[in-house]
Length: 178
Image 1 (cartoon, one colour):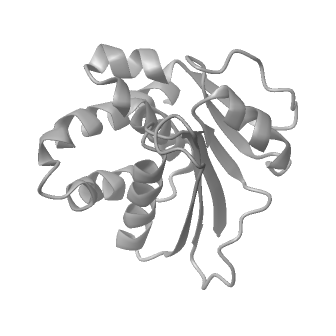
Image 2 (image 1 turned 120 degrees about the vertical axis):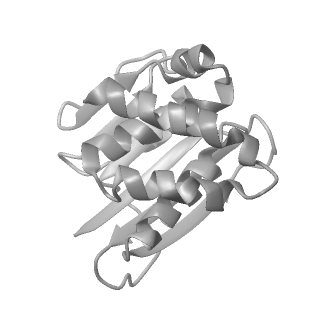
């Protein structure tokens, strides 16, 4: 098994947090993981993406050129990465911020109003977790439970007050695709 993932959006949308959480959950499950962040020149509002490889065997290179899954939180990221997803891959889109349909017909496409769902939960910054929850339900790599268990580690002591809302957002995303 080898899953290659790109998570992309604007800086400030929690792209790196989602990637690190996914990586931590996979490591907790005993899988091999690479995590490769990429930032735009700006801190907030610029582009941000990360690529991950999760495998049950050693990974030779952290480079993801044709991901099997793409989690997209904004329109510029869809424009940039849609063409790179491998045939038959999974594309999860934040329909709240992406104002066009995907052009590819050879992908499994899941559109979620992640920003609206996050606002309903009480924190717009959890749209990333709504999207990640949907991914976890679709792929089951790593297990949803391992990612939930990893939340306290990744958030750390300083942000433990965000544990509950992030867990709820993951559950929300999971429930939207069940």
